Image 1 (cartoon, rainbow, N blue to C red):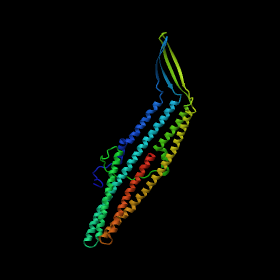
Image 2: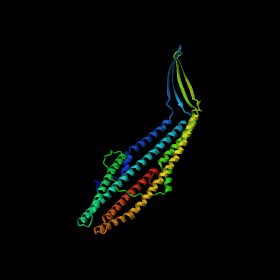
Image 3: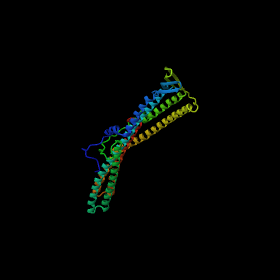
Image 4: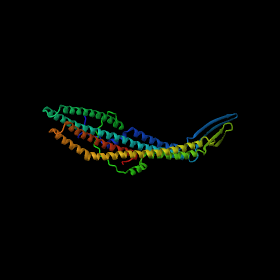
Length: 392
């Protein structure tokens, strides 16, 4: 059945849907697990390489020796610390990615919710128009039966009713599609039930354009994540330069000579010499420096993109706010007065049916535009929240 549910029927609130999305959305959960995975890398890279156990036997007549011992690779001082800092920056970037994913999913949920709300509002408006058209049809038939109106007035009313039924069918299809989108975000099956959306409140803007631009630097997880990537680049350059220094391997062995029945030991220090520094370590530094510069440029490009998106969505929100006030306070009340006057005039034959019909359709389109602009305003606010990381 098309139209709004009865007042006693439950409504889906945005707050409850957001809470469910945080708990169930697979994209959010996957981003959180990637963050947990990144944190688990930090202690691994800060730990010394696993030691090697040495067991050996040497048979050279008349000497027979048994060897046993252990070796430990020791990176040059500072390398493990730098690897840990790089892994920490990676984990911090994953944390920001997790926050950005939360904001993106919630923004998508809100946009779908507001679109669904607009569909229900549109169905409600068209349902009321249908009732009035049926009244107009009855009036036209009554006047035609006494010779006060043309039969085409009846046909025109019937035609508009048919067109309206077609629009209602399209809205019903869109309602089902949005229903499936929201269920996907909530990790439900597409056909799982979803209560109709509850009422929405018009959200005013609390920040000026300059304040919104400042919020990007302060709280945007998208920008903070790229900043962590840049910091990782700094640490990667430092580690690449540290690769010019040698690593060491300590080797301690016990020896037993079977022929002489004597015991001894052997200690060795192996040094990994960066002999091919011109084609290895030097190029490694060049690679790290280029990667760090690329991260810096990516940060600048991302910041410019976010500022552009803020301006675009802010302009959309401001436009919608102006139109909502104009439609609510002036255009729709005037359209209703015009329709009321036209109904009375048509009943006594002062205006033709086309004028009456145009008055009704004008009111209908104004009401649809009002609900559309309310939805577009809230969608722009939701997108701004996803960019700056908080309610603007």
